Length: 303
Ligand code: 13P
Ligand code: SF4
Image (tube, rainbow, N blue to C red; front, side, top):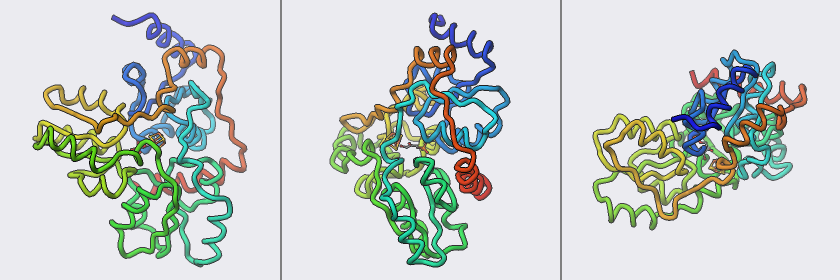
């Protein structure tokens, strides 16, 4: 039976001509009521196609910003304006300019987990689902990969023909997972396959049977004949994993990785922003045009 909160959201969505987008790291109750759920690449792509007037973006601020950059006619509302990805800020001031001076042909490749200012200074955006493909496709030999050192290192290993220069940013939730924690689960579930997000450290990725984005992990688990999996990413993916595979077992490392920022999205806050229109993403038009270039290039190269 639908709760009063869910019924209220459904009514408000119709009244305000709004849709709800949610990342796989949001809580189960958010994923249950979302119109579109996905990884950050899917959500950026779908934002371009939304026909409704308003998008309520249940994710973190860089995701809402990307939706607004791509589809500026829409009103993009964040249930909690403080939901932010710490890694999105992790590039030192002046670092991009310094490397551009050093390398004539430098391509600044910017993981979408980045603040607007970083996107405006970048040549192309990537997500964890297309970073390898896009870096391979670039004509440039020298690549500055920002902000995530772990995804950057993974790309560097997959594209050895390029000089991938790493930055020192990281996801605090993925960084703390250790190889020992994965091995401890492997001891309990020796037949389990290890599925890991590329934001994990090298030591964890070395133990992985599959490395990919949240959508990649979900799709791998669905298509695999294996019955047990150790999942090395944020625990929100469990909702879709269980929905797709009721007969399979999924375990996470202990302690379970939780992105507190993603969990700031709640049903009550969705109702609040739908009623009040507060927490709207507003972007300066000059910045938007600059940031759109690398995002559009990503959407083009990822095809
Ligand atoms: P995805 O691109 O796999 O959705 O990951 C986003 C993210 O924030 C990972 O921590
Ligand atoms: Fe950012 Fe990590 Fe949360 Fe993803 S899991 S949004 S990278 S803090």
